[in-house]
Image 1 (cartoon, one colour):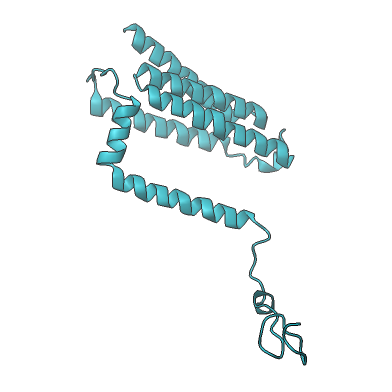
Image 2: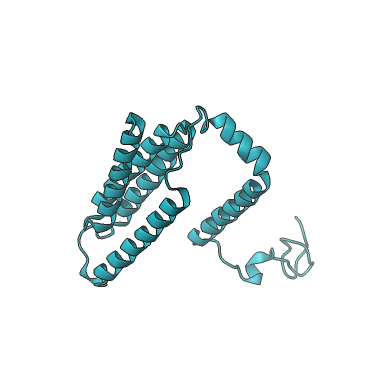
Length: 193
């Protein structure tokens, strides 16, 4: 094994181990911190694979935004951060069995599909220039569809979160029309001054 493979394997072990701790720890804040470790190990794996741009996007978006949003959500909503017996379904062993079976199937498929095949790493394969060329030349239509979908979800989230946006009654929607039929006219009087 080369040094690069050893570092990648160690980062993979750290990512998987911290991901297991994310779902097994009983403190929500500790789970968020283990999630930071897992995302950091994934970013390190991207760096080892010479995908520097993807690694920094991983750090900025997932570590810098998603985990911070999760922590702010926990702290600002005053959600219970300790153990909660009413949220425990008691299916831990069934979940563990399903997770182990899924992992076994994935590993078996990967080993059978690739075996001992190796792919040489190209320097600059994950650079911003190459990624931008792929996104805006080869995959431009799916990229635009995804951007419209994200915009629609953002607008929907804003509409759902605003409490002052409601259907107004028809009487409030139209301006006051007096007897003369002009806005602001007094009933039975003259319009204007």
